[in-house]
Image 1 (cartoon, rainbow, N blue to C red):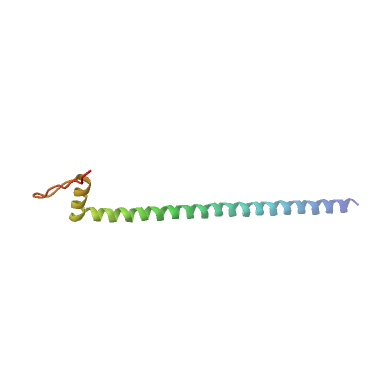
Image 2 (tube, rainbow, N blue to C red):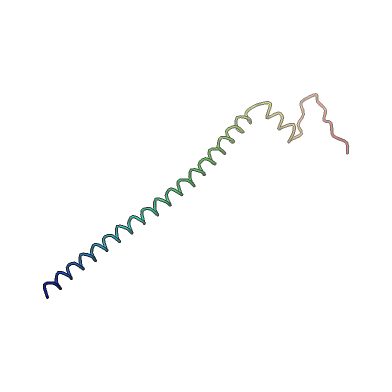
Length: 95
């Protein structure tokens, strides 16, 4: 009878150890999946931010190139600053 009890205790101990190992491996697996999900979400967020920044950079590059054009500079000087060329007359709209 005692031999059977010892075998049952060994058997139960093996079951408990196996259960603990399986639970630990399961926990590690789930934890890794959560980490990978968060990293994937962060990559998508930062990729979208990078695309926005690149679009803004392209727009600024175009504006810079445009600002180097003499015709653009003259148009802005006339519109925003009210400047005129020598010999021209300013025409103001009537009220």
